[in-house]
Length: 194
Image (tube, rainbow, N blue to C red; front, side, top):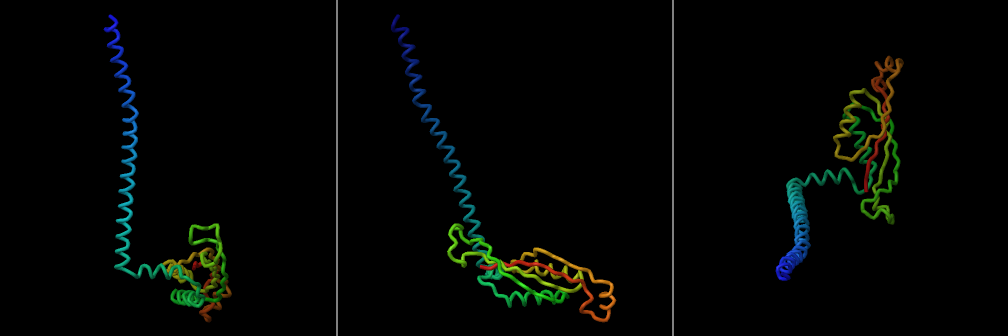
């Protein structure tokens, strides 16, 4: 009788030992399979990223003018006569007269690299230059001027626009003097360089 009771208990203990011996490795296999699936997804995303990067590089090789536009939008150094000529030409093409032009350089403190804590050289900073332009002309000409600035390849931020409609005396006098007959506009523009 002892053998009859001992044999099922011994079989149950062997089955339990085998079960507890196999469950942890099986759960580790499931965890590793999940991690493997995540790594395969990450690998596929990396492959897609590099494939996209390669197509962009091929497009840049086919059209080198794109990089020239970026170089023009963010020049390596600030050149005031070039910007003054740009604003003068753009205002004249739009039908406005440029009355006054002033600028000031602002040290932004924005670094081009990730080491923002070390501010050793000013060449690592983006330089911001602010302009104030006083213009005279019609509203339609001013809208055209703003569209031309927006479509420019230069990186320009129009921060503030002030305008004043012509007075009655100016309008009546403007019939003979076409230069002073429009509205006065004052805009603040920022540009960026390295």
